[in-house]
Length: 189
Image (cartoon, rainbow, N blue to C red; front, side):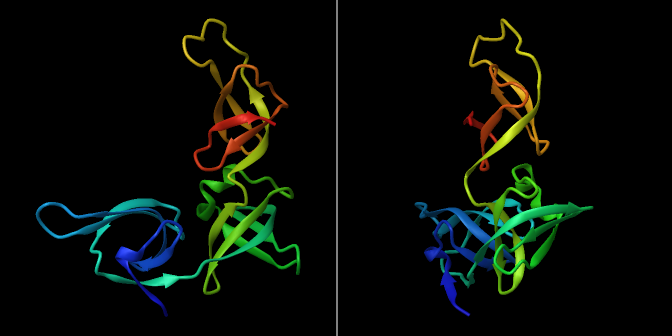
């Protein structure tokens, strides 16, 4: 069990904190004029997906976690369970839908390769292999003329049910590239 000091935490590093496994998104060392130095850390709980910003003492030590990522194909949905298959040995892993709240907007049955994240044999969750994915538009409202005082946008629904803002020229049946970080439209595919 390797321990890491809070001052040594860096973006992308995983550690155990408050009985959960956290991934550091951002960190900053703060030394105010008065008082003790603190570490400001923005981190994501890999079990629940929640993002938290907190301050911790830079002298505290935490258990460092090694996150294994395995490429798996999103196979199908069975009720409230998402099933992923390993393409090498055809084994499957089932994850409850509540563990995939954000990423289920970007995965398509039988098409999407995901990275399943594991720590010491426990499946923590998934993330898409790429930061941008291509999805088909299933519903697009007609463009409204005169709504061009700023960048003209309209709401479109993608094949996964995600609703995004896209340019007026996007029509039903088009394929668009969407960012998995914030769910924003990037370009036409």
